[in-house]
Length: 161
Ligand code: THU
Image (cartoon, rainbow, N blue to C red; front, side, top):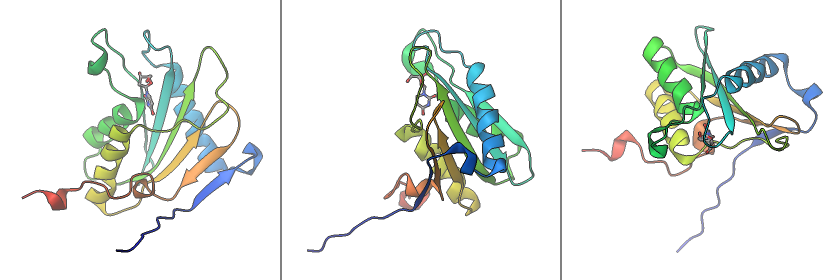
């Protein structure tokens, strides 16, 4: 028997003035996307902006549905749109943020497990880490080096026959 300890390095920017301009620009694009969310049921607006290796930015926002499970998160909306438009271009970074209409979100929003799994697919497809930047409306910004830091022991294509 042995114990395995997992560690991951996260850059935490407590003050937004410390965040590199390139990351703040991507967060601003995610925020713009969040404003376009279709979220009549939860009213929680999420936006994501994917920076591709070719410099293009593809955004997405959550799309809800009266049949609740038929809706889709912002991250997957953005990732699928990016892959559909530029199937051969790796993702460099993704910024994710959200707007809570009831109470200002003071902590970084966290992508759900399904979105982490989907982002991991593109990370492994291109064998290139996708940096993940998480922000709330205010407060700290988290910068992860790669998706696998957010989803260790991931299910991947190597398991399939
Ligand atoms: N949502 C996202 O779009 N991304 C996340 O990271 C968390 C949750 C959406 C799904 C649903 O439309 C709403 O937020 C409430 O869960």
